Image (tube, protein in one colour):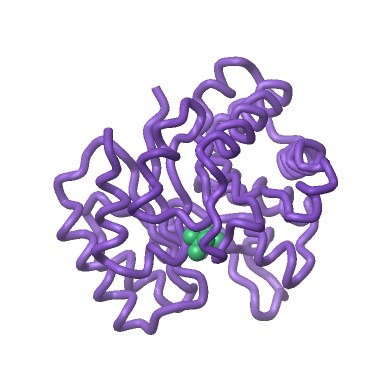
Length: 251
Ligand code: PGA
């Protein structure tokens, strides 16, 4: 059985105090939730504060990015090792905003995924096609290469720890969500690609999240799909009430 996961990606939002207050509020409101994993991803500067605020609660902490080295002469970068030290259990890798804004390649993403796994943290690998790629009929090819290149040279044992987030770029922050059927179709394809890279058991156990304008009023339909195991949520994770409603999706 795949344990559902709802993750909030706070992106470049919230001061230290705002992050602390939201995290503390979530820890309190979600204290009774025991059947799914709950994750929030604040900006780097708030990670330690948020980790302290949710310590011992049902909420875990993720980073939004990392650098694929432990320590060294890498000015401005932060490693999985230090993120773990600050209280992270997960790291989001390859978000489409990073792929687009700073041209992160599948090769760099692969190095990051490996470093996260070697540090005993769980990577949330984001993949997804642009509107242009979808309209050109390239969607499946794009998803397959993002997975094959992003997960290259990773042992089956480590592949079993990877969380994948399917986030169609045209649905992120736009208010346009993939329909339940469009999302299920992509997720089922993704599970098939993972099976090709590993084993049927690993593919069956792999958690594949959907992301892109997920809100309390569309989460139930999406998460009712066979291959959708959770959500990676941007905008709607910034408000306490909305995120609590998302975590309490119908099950
Ligand atoms: P959104 O963002 O929910 O605001 O569309 C999702 C994401 O980028 O992870």
